[in-house]
Image (cartoon, rainbow, N blue to C red):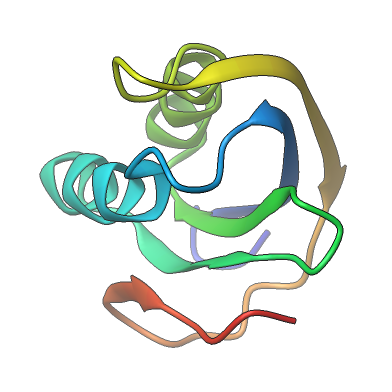
Length: 95
């Protein structure tokens, strides 16, 4: 945590690719004022880094448990992350 910001890396599993999950995450994170990124993983999961006020990060993680309407989320696993200090939220290439 730096400057009142919390950073969390999340891995979301289930039916989360091909359902607009990344675009939904970008829109939702922008509304919440979060920084970070989201990307598909080669194993079929989605990975995201959320950085911002702890309450906003927690609300985003809660929302990730549902995702967009076509998603079927099985699990959201999280771990503390390092705040890279970057601003904005965007999509990254599949890893």
